[in-house]
Image (cartoon, rainbow, N blue to C red; front, side, top):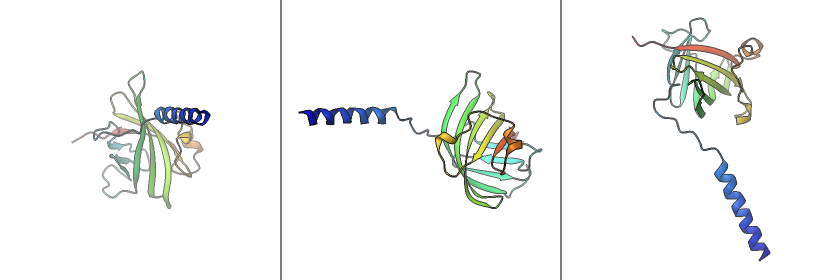
Length: 159
């Protein structure tokens, strides 16, 4: 009888733990983050984001990307001011000579989804504990590699 009680308690605890795990975010085809973003004052002046990838370009007119990689949205939420936030995992195919480089990013879109701020961190492996906890503009000046830092882009206007 004692063993049956222990087993029932273990099953109940396991069910509780599994039930408390955060659900995996499933992006829609029209996430606010997706689209073409530009900032002529940056090295990579254009970034194109879609449901599973990103591409970075030298200029807004460039057709061949400098780098390309995969992207997975891990989490999305809206703050009390209406800004949209995302956490993503990325892996760059080849970023400044670094092959298969994992990084993870905290993104903030303005309420109108026309201004995109983000701070990315190069990591050894993806881990939810490694996400930046705020958009720290000073990270750009402290960055020891090109994937770490704060950047801001603006949604490209359609012709």
